[in-house]
Length: 305
Ligand SMILES: [Zn+2]
Image (cartoon, rainbow, N blue to C red; front, top):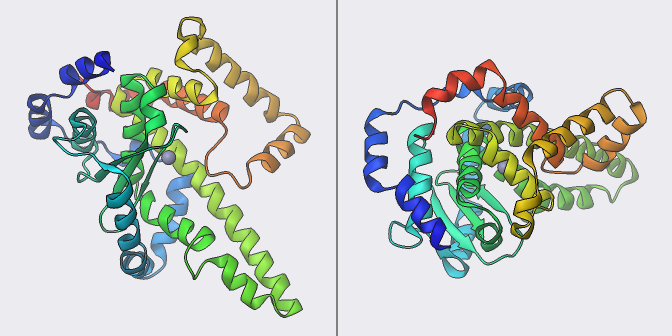
C-alpha cells in the first residue's frame, strides 16, 4: 500500500487536477459509445418523458434507501478520507466532463465496483479491489465506473435493477400477480423473458462502452486488460509469471472459437443470456480492438499525462 500512496501522490495531486480543470476539454462521447449501446439509449430516450418520470420515481423511492445503506454501512471517501482515491476520481471527472459522484468503500473480498443513482450519482468500490489491483488498475476501474455516468447508463441500470430484481414493484412480483390466470401467466412470462434478454444484452454492450472510457482515461489498454486478467484469476501472487500479451492472444482464440461454430455460439448465448457483463475474454478482445482503432488514436489528446 505504501507504493500505492506514493504513486497516487505523484499522479493525482491537487495541483495536477487544478491544471487539468482549466485545460482539459471533455472527451467526445461519440468516440467511445458502442453502437448497440448508442442505439438502445436512443430508443429509450425517444420515449416521451421516460427519463424524467423514471428519474423522479427512483429519486423518491430508491435513492433515500440507498443513501441510508451507504452512510450507515460503508466508508465515505472524501478529500480527507482515502484522499488518493478521491483525487483519482476527481481527475477522471475532469477528463470526461461529469460532476463528482459520491464515493464509498465497502467491505467485500470480491473485487468489484458499482455505480447507481438518478439525480445524484454514487460509486462504491469493494475492499477486495484495493487488495488485488495495482494502482493504475484501480484508476482504470474508477474510470470505467465514471464512464457509466458519462454515457448516461446509470439511470437505465438503476431502473433495470429496480424493475427486474428489487422493490415492491419489480417485474417478478407483477408477473406473479398476473400469472394467477393461465393466459396471464404465458403473457407475463414472455414479456419478462424478452425484457430481461434485451436488458441484459444492452447492459453487456454498455460495459464495452465503459471499458473504452477506461482505456481512454488511462491513455492505454494495458491497465484495463490487466484488470480483466486479475478478474480471470490473476492474483498478485503470480505477477511475475503472468503475461498480458498471452491473455490477449487467448481472447483472440476464444473469439475464433465462437465466430464460425454455431454450436459454440449457441453455448455462449446460453452462458451469457442472464449476465450483466460480457465474458472476460470478450471484454479483453474488445478493449484491444478499440486500442487499435482510429477512434482511440483521436482520444490520445485526453490521455492521463
Ligand atoms: Zn460496468
